[in-house]
Image (cartoon, rainbow, N blue to C red; front, side, top):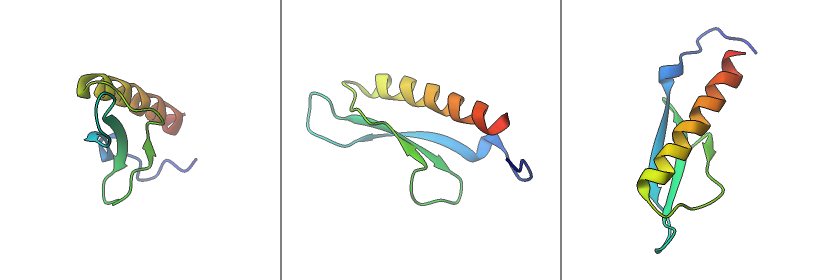
Length: 68
């Protein structure tokens, strides 16, 4: 992969309320300058904190793949 212009601070996790309770929360990964997420959770989470933890783990995995 071409690493020119790669900056891990260009990526962020956003947690959104996407469904009625009890499992309402989904994480999405965005890259700066993009309107649509480049990744999102396939499952909905019970709490915002759980979705945020899972999203941060997914972002860490994505960045490790991009950095390889």
